[in-house]
Image (cartoon, rainbow, N blue to C red; front, side):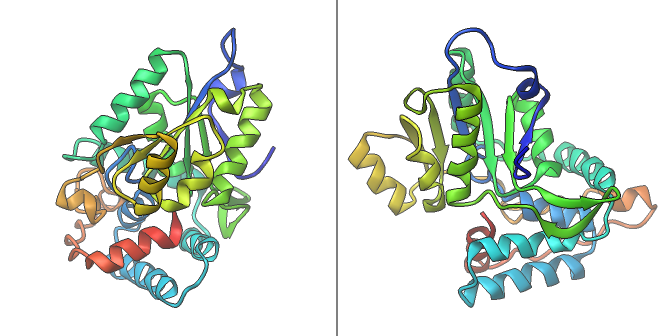
Length: 279
């Protein structure tokens, strides 16, 4: 099995009768209005100094022109030595804490997902994020497949290394692999994304949708007749990825510690750099 493809139970069970059609959806700022990797990391660490050190290091790398694949790998070093099962449980608590925030789910994009499900499409979430925050989102939305980055695990713990990244061209690679394995014709499939890095995914299928106003994607939408939906707009808390302040659900509560203070919102430039560095 390709280590960068995470499969759901529905995937392993096989597809429904008839031609297989798949709708591929980017996740961050497409289906949800925040950056799952950073929102979840902040929640899981429950340590503002440690979180900020990680975020600042990735921002500096982005400013220095470090390739996205390298910064995406660097993100996962923050989990080195942590038990996979504990991180997964933290992901479920994170989702319970953030799913009710205003703007967490992008209403129009989720509506499009529901419409395609009603037409018989399988749904695949495609993200540079990983299973801990993505699995609860996939379960909630009834997605059939999760194609994501896969951190390396040894003896039940993350090593801090990554088996492969699902960003940029990597999204198209895992989408093609799934279509090939399930016998889906690319021209019968669809894909949705919000960022220029999603272009390889959008162009490997027969129809595409653009979320928001990324100039590269808007230009392609006009040229190819792709559909367009408005940008995902989360609440202020969701936009800065702050879920750690909930003492009832954050990991600090399990240890009886006080919840960390809410972080100062990062500058727009650093927020964009963090997103571009890891998506």
